[in-house]
Length: 499
Image 1 (tube, rainbow, N blue to C red):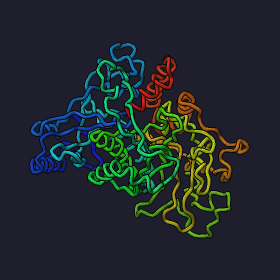
Image 2 (image 1 turned 120 degrees about the horizontal axis):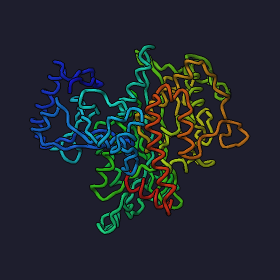
Image 3 (image 1 turned 90 degrees about the vertical axis):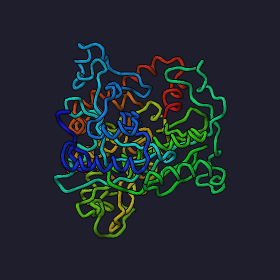
Image 4 (image 1 turned 180 degrees about the vertical axis):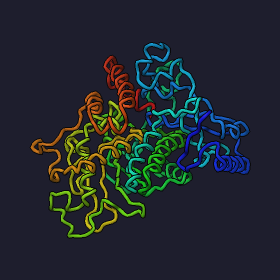
C-alpha cells in the first residue's frame, strides 16, 4: 500500500510507533502459543467476516494487510450482491463504487492494538481490521470509518459521546437433526433451524426462569467476561425465550465495537453448545415479543462531565418542558433526534422484519415523541437536575442495526439540533395516542429509505454517495421480498437463520 490508515490508537502504519506495536503483538502471538489468526472485519450489517492465517503468515500481514473480495462490502442481509460489479458501464453509474468492478480486492489493514483470543480456543487469535483499496485510498463505505468521521464532528467543541447498550435477544435450543444441516435442503438463504424455547416467557425477570436457563446464560457470561466487555446485567426478558444484556456506558466507538463483538461471538459460543442465539427483532413464531436495542447517550466534555445534565433546580418531572430535566445543550440535541427520527430510522431499523415491532402499547415507539422516564416514547429522558447520569435513551433501534451507523446517525441528528438551536415539543404522556399529533415513524423499510434520502442532516453527515449505496442495498432486499411467494418464510430464512 502506498498510503496508510490511522487507527484509533493514533498509530500510523509504517511509522516507528506502528512498527513497534506490530513487533509487540508478534511477540504476544508467539508467547501465547497462537497457532492461527482471524483477521476480522465488520460488514455493512454488523457481522464479522474473517480470513484465517497461520501464525507466521499472520505476523507478516500485521504490517502489509491482507486481501479480501470487495464484493463483501456490497451485500444485503442474504449475501446477495446489490450492484452489477461485472458490468463496467453499470457499476460506474453508482457514485464511489466503480473501484469494486470485477469483484476486485480491497485490503484489510489490522490494528495491532485490537487483539483478542477466542474465549473457547486460546490458540486462535483475532485482530480487528478496516478496509482500504490497494493503492492506500481509504474505502469510504467501511462503516467503522463512517462512525469515526461522525465522532470527529464533536472534536472542535471538545465534546465526546458516551453510549450505553441495552440489548434484547432470543436464545433457543437447537433440535437434533434440524433441516438446516441437511445438504439436500441447502438453499440461499438456507432453512432456519428447528428450535425449542428455554423459558415460556410472560414473566419479566422471573427468578425461577433464571435457574432453568442457567447453562446458556453462563455461556454468555463467560464469553463476555473473557472478551473484557463491561456487562452490567443479564436478565430474563418478557417474551418466550427472550433475554436482555445491559452494558456500562463508555466511549461511543468502544460501545459500537463492543456491540459487534457481543453479537457475533456470543452467537458463536452458544452455537458450539447447541443453542441458537438470534438478534432478529421478531423471530418467526406466534406470540413472541419483539426485541429492541435501546441506545443510551450523552455528550461529555474533555474532563468527562455530563453536558446533558441540568446543573441545578428541582426535579420537575411533571413539567413538560425539556429544560426541566436537561441542559440547554441536551434539550437541543433531543430536539435534533426528534426532528430527524424518520430520516435516521433506516440506520436504526435496517431490516424489513424490524418495522413489525412498532405496535401500540408494545414498549416500542410509533411516533417521534419524548417523555420523562416513559418507555412508550421514542426518546426516554433518564435523570434530571444535578444527576451526572442524565441521558437520552433512544428506543427506536433493533438489535440487527449496524452499531457504527446507528450511533453515527445520532451524532448527525443531535448536532443539527444543537446547530439550529431546535426546541423540543412538550413531553408526551400518551405516546400511543393518535391525538398526540406528532410525527409518525416510517411504517416499513421502503418508507424509511425514502425519508433517509430526503433528510438534510443525514445527507450532510453521511454524504450523498453513502446514502445512495446504503439505499441500493436496502432496495435490493425489498425487491426480493416483494417477489417471495412466502413472505414469512422469506423473513425466517433471511434473518432468523442467519442473525
